Length: 70
Image (tube, rainbow, N blue to C red; front, side, top):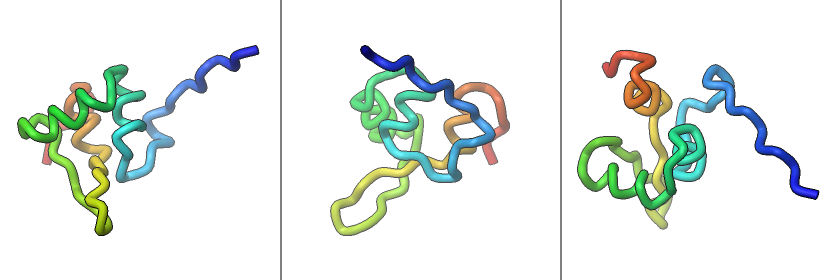
């Protein structure tokens, strides 16, 4: 039996989100999130030696039209 996806509460999100978390919130694929980062639509912060991407919660909320971008 497949469990239904948990509802995402915006107030419960961490300040820095992974590619997968952002994709889930915006309901797009992780590849779309990476493309948006390359185009400057959603700037990424690179962490660790692998260069993993993290995204500021404020930037994601701004894309949703919920919060003004600083």
